[in-house]
Amino acid sequence: MAPLLEARGLSRSFGHVRALDDASFDIDAGEVVALIGDNGAGKSTLVKALTGNLAVDAGDLYFEGRQVTITSPHQASEMGMEVVYQDLALAPHLNPVQNMFLGREIPRKGLFGSLGFMDEKQMRAKAEAGFADLGGTVRSFTSPVGSMSGGQRQQIAIVRAISWADKIVFLDEPTAALGVVQTKNVLDTIKRVRDKGIAVVLISHSMPHVLEVADRIQVMRLGTRVATMPAEGTTVEQLVGAMTGALDSQTVNRRNSATLEDSAS
Amino acid sequence: MSVITPPGQAPDQQAVLEAPPKQSYVKRIANMQSVWILGVLVVIVAAFSLAAGTKFLSTSNFSLISQNIAVWAVLGVGMTFVIITSGIDLSIGSVLVFSSVIAAKVMEAVGGNGWSTAAVGIVGALVSGIAWGTLNGFLIAKAKIPPLIVTLGALSVALGLAQVITGGIDIRSVPEALTDFNTYIKIVGIPALPFVALIVVIIGGIVLHKTRFGRYTYAVGSNELGARRVGINVDRHLIMVYALSGACAGLGAVLALAQFGTTTIAGQSLTNLNVIAAVVIGGTSIFGGEGSIFGTVVGLFIPAVLQAGFVIVGVEAFWQGVAVGSVLVAAVYVDQSRRAAALRGSSRPSFLAMLRTKK
Image (cartoon, rainbow over the protein chains, first blue to last red):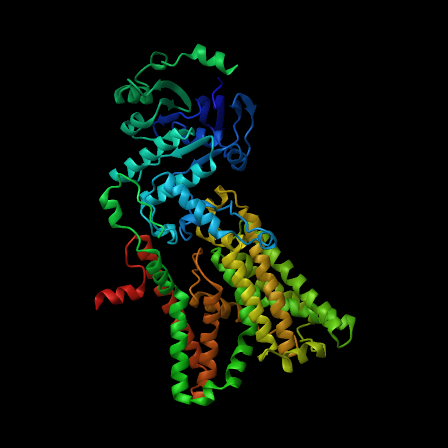
């Protein structure tokens, strides 16, 4: 079976800097893939290129086996991909329900709907169902998001992404600013998302978290993928070695690349 | 209750939770800046009533007050939208003058004193206002020039052009239909101009608080990048918001023509600042993302009531400026302390709560 999303040979330069240099990526449905690498390795750039936020100079994208070009975040959303950015992109003055449906408000039926009136009741009900589904820690649906804790905001951003993504959710450093309990909640959430059959791409600096939730780990260095390894049986030392270049990429690439090429064609 | 308690919830997580919905609703109302300002307004009215009695509390006095703020209320609706997007529109007074000049010129050209002439003038004023607003919005959203600069430029250009067109002399040929509308007509006991303003205020409030357009206005002011990321066309929305402000200025021009029977070329130089002050006093944050039309209306009444009250009590009207300026600064101070408290994530969201804990 072809991977859900696959990128081959993505390259992008900013002036003299090669942010992406022949980078590849692949993820299957219902799989958690961690994307790790040192600062400036090109993780965020890769995610931007995959989700239509950045045009690439070269390279191909395949979605469910078909070659695609994604030119806008809107297009990526329509294909079932959502990104939770590091800054969460929530409107702090709006409440969780309003944030969740921002840009996708449910109109009221009939004339009022075409005048721009919104079905607040239905949005509220759906949002509550969404939060209940993921066992959220968000209690108030009427307070502005800005008054909530970092963990709750993270939860809102993730629930929003999951509610709209039925294929892939990209999480950019979701645990960077969180405490122990909130981090555990986020990791549990990721597992629950995976159990719903949605693929998760997790960008993280935290090796233990990555090893805990990911099925596969792709290591980036200097704008390219240098290693892909299953989380099981991999150690933090190996990951760090691949990230820093201490280990040779060929020796750690334990996923059979021959099978990969066959299945993709 | 909307509380969801998933299994395996750590107890310390639940400690910081929101109060039950009912209480939080009351709290929310109590925390609204506009409610505090309404309290200030009530105190002012009560004070003047004690000092001047029925002379102040008369229908004619309040009818006069409402007539004085009718034009500003219409402008305030557009300004509230603009400020919620964390923008500013300094050009409304000049756009009002320009639009009234256009309307007067058009009506002069058509001739006649009836409603058909007036209708042509109204359309002229609205088109001119919307054109100015769209231009402002385009320069702000697409050319990325700061709103302060764009609308400062428009302030100067619109007034200058109005003076070029008229040679600096006010046009007095306003059809009687319009001036009579102001002088004689009362709708359900309310003089015509305040009635029109009331309609605009109600529509503005509904659009801001109940429709997608209003929701996006808050979202753009609250987190512009975030709004872009969820697929809101921020540029188009900003252009529409400034066009709305321009349309309000155009309608304000019609009301001003009806009220004064002449273009007010030299008379609108402080209109923009007065309207901005009212909007901000009413709890709309100049940092964007927060505000209400109701607050703006209350914020408009404060200077108007002060002025009327000072005249009746016999205090020199100059004191009005002193009082309004002080209220403005105090209101923004309270607003900012609230905001800072909310950002710290503290459970001390309002100025009152600060006072309460000290007791």
